Length: 101
Length: 101
DNA sequence: CCAATAGTTAGACGATTGTAAAACTGTTGT
DNA sequence: ACAACAGTTTTACAATCGTCTAACTATTGG
Image (cartoon, rainbow over all chains, first blue to last red):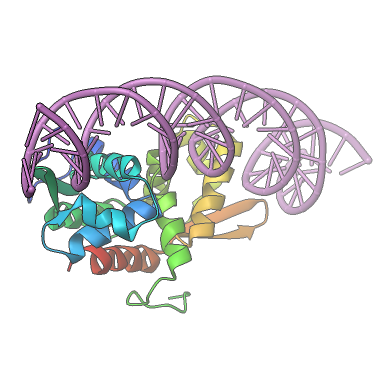
């Protein structure tokens, strides 16, 4: 698996790009939202909420993990996911710092 | 100020998607950054800063305008651009509201 | 009026992307 | 052990995207 930096850090340019790219697909943002709405969400839950195959969900989650927006840990046959809100906040801050004030 | 919106406004889902998509290309974010760094930026300035053709710059600016992230007004032969920071802030807030909090 | 400049539009092309089907690995319950 | 379940990987394909060249419009200066 790829690196997932610890919280509070300043985003590296590479991760900034990965996050922006990950957020560019509406379905992936909807997935993020669904993951965030539950506490420790299993992929099988997500499958019932979106009209996409399990392969597609697996792919999206992999991208979200790669961007550092989601943490996923195996527990038995289930994959439990949760959103790293600190990373998301770091992204918005970096974005505003780069473009805004 | 010239905008009628304040930073607390809620983005329509369509604009949310357009913004996320616009921010997904690193070059476009770099363009945004360059536009923001000057007071009122003409496209011809941008051309010197990036190794892309004028057609590509025109295309990117069109996308940024379409997303609402940039305001562009013609003044003679020049196109003056500036970043709508309120829209950018609205995006980050909407993102955090949807996923984080 | 002419030439130079600023930006737009159209068309094409290679690269990337979202998606699904199918085959696979790993886990749980009976 | 076996069947059902959860998720991954591979492969393939249509759609989208970033980029360029070339041709176009529109504006400015001599």
